Image 1 (tube, rainbow, N blue to C red):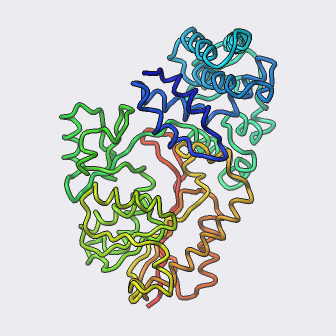
Image 2 (image 1 turned 45 degrees about the vertical axis):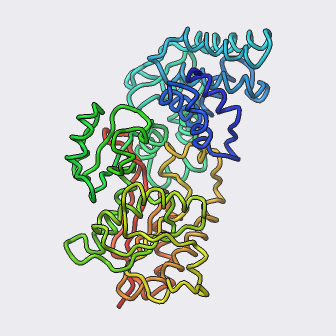
Image 3 (image 1 turned 30 degrees about the vertical axis):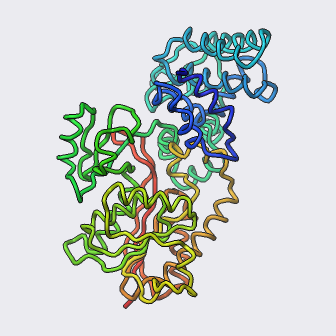
Length: 464
């Protein structure tokens, strides 16, 4: 079996921020180690903070990262992440294993180089866990909202003179995105978004209410010795001890689904406007962008598995994930249909009647879930937002044609950008006088006690 650091180095040997997703590589390599959660944290934490780590390497080693061979750089980045963001790990352990891992991919000279770079970094760290109230922000990198890694010299932009430059450097986020947030939300909220975007996200699960209540699931976890707590008001549970949730007792039996608090909000808002106040369940619901089925199955549970729900997605491979989740949870009310069969020329009969509701969780920029979609910060470009908004508007028009008079569209994103949310909805309303806005809600990501992602949900009603 390999160590977590060895697996991390191998993940980065195969990973490209622009071409593939790290989760699929991790899934393939994690069976090679008994330290699965630690390996996952090392990889995801390094990607979230990569630009800041590169700044540390360049500043304190005197060698620009572009001039370091890729395999050595990956090992140094992993070690740099631990030195800066994992103060509980001994320095000697981090450096020694990085040197050993370098031996496996390079010669003696390169191994000595890795050792020299990491020793230089450790020499310039004056406090691996400084408190916020005592920190000089220009010489520290934030670990959490209250703790920082402090260096012996200023190497970050002045946060007072240039907040955008400072936040960009400290949190490894695109400057155009930081500038947009500052304009929309102000400095303090933007700082909180940055912390939330770089946090280690908590694991939340939604009980499958067709089989078990939140209280019963909590008792099930207690008996299985799984550290947990119920989240007030939303009937969800946070698993406090990091672990592979698919291996948690009850997952295979379909007792719960992994879902963030904010993501669950969209489904609950949708149900509240469809009959969640005690009215009759809607007869016919379409989930137009269903994969991987988290919101689809939530609606099935909320409706008591009595509504007729059609789930489709343009990505046929990901649509298979919907079937897997539906089968695991024991849901009967969801029918899975290939996207092409929803065309107007469909012979399947699906469009012979309109839907009572269309759930439209559109593809988006992921700016509300950057802590989980760790590659997004390096792929996202400003022009991408406009391109995505065009696709979202097209999908919203498609949903408008599929909902019956008096029916509802639940439009949701995991973005916090205006162009994908309230601006797009208002443009839709301006073009579609037969729709009204019933409600909308934007939640910014948070790193507070019950941390959560960001996202947007709106209910649009077609006039009778």
